[in-house]
Amino acid sequence: MLKLSKKCEYGLMAVRYLAFNSGRKYSTAREISEYYDIPYELVAKVLQKLARKKVVSSFQGVGGGYFLTRSPEYISIDEVINAIEDNYKITDCMIENGSKSECYLVQNCRIRSPLIKLQEEVDKLFQNMKITHIL
Image 1 (cartoon, rainbow, N blue to C red):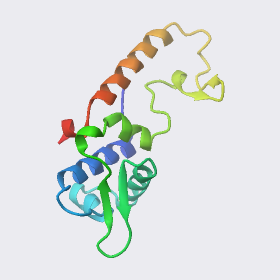
Image 2 (cartoon, one colour; image 1 turned 90 degrees about the vertical axis):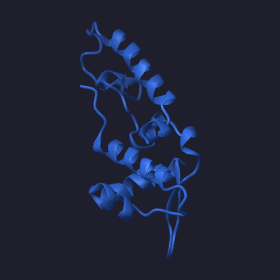
Image 3 (cartoon, rainbow, N blue to C red; image 1 turned 30 degrees about the vertical axis):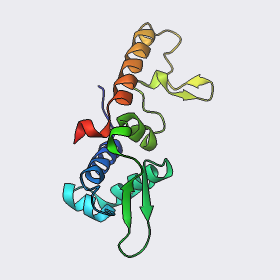
């Protein structure tokens, strides 16, 4: 089943919140967690990952918080997902561990090729879909 992790869901929710509140200076992880009723610790971790990948930026101190580094129409869903998940793939056989696939069936698999095409289509969809599409 094609499924995003909770971290990715929370990341998309956080970025959506920041996009909605872009008129304000900063939004905190606490605000976001309370608004969506999701765990603060996970929101904070996700925002840190997004900050490391420069999707969001942060300002420390009193009145500090997070804000989008660019306008929502220039931030793709793919960018958010890949900032949070190192290897977002629809099956284990597409996740490389060094030069070897994670799946032990890869040598005998007959569906890998069509699934690679499906992964490419999912990737294109996420790359073309911007934050403005989820507002």
